[in-house]
Image (cartoon, rainbow, N blue to C red; front, top):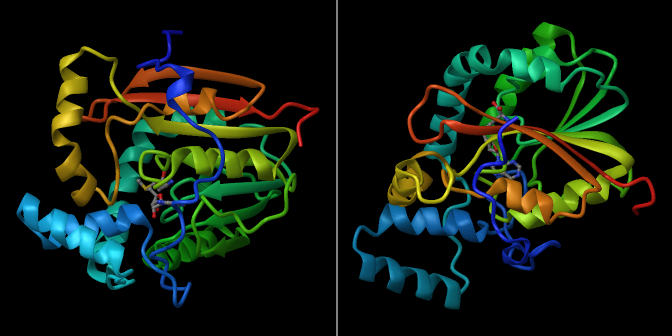
Length: 278
Ligand SMILES: C[S@@+](CC[C@H](N)C(=O)[O-])C[C@H]1O[C@@H](n2cnc3c(N)ncnc32)[C@H](O)[C@@H]1O
């Protein structure tokens, strides 16, 4: 096993839910606002010049102007792309995912399940709950579940605010989600909260390349554009550092690369909640 990619000082990461997450783009949550990250994407897309962006952002923030909640065509397009790209990424990652998902049982929470690429890899005996903010993913996922004969409890929401009681989940799962959540420490705090003591958080994510490498520089350069075209994804996110600051008792992770540009460095593994943790 190689050392974790891009280690960062623990002090740089702050745990706990973020008060910044007040809003959600989910169209099922009528009357809510976009989360700050989505508002930024909205501004980035609509205001081409840096000064205009800044002005637009300040005015929106000050007057609590609500951008259109739907981001309709973008979310719809992203769901369509993911449905097709999912097949390729699954074929690249299937073996690792199969190992990762061995021994699933009880209540399983999947955050950001997208169009349900992982569903074929789950045993039918689990109780599956999914939290997916993009409503255009839901039909793809439900159709896939129906074809597989799997019962799903799919909810529209964000992983920063999981509507489940504390200690009610045996296993939480995230694949290619932590790169795009608005508040990474907040999501990890929620995952930790809903896991029962001894529960496992299974993850497979792309991560920042090691500091000082040309790939890390490239990830930083392309980040603003990538963030907009890849639905909020940050290619240079230091996920191992955030995991190690999230209060889990044990983290086992393996680093590997896949043959794709920019986001080749990956981690796969699990974080375990302490038995005496609440
Ligand atoms: C790259 S896709 C991965 C989908 C799926 N996990 C897979 O492996 O195919 C990222 C997913 O995370 C979802 N997502 C983004 N922000 C989220 C948040 N704050 N909470 C939960 N899911 C989120 C997106 O809507 C999208 O479905």
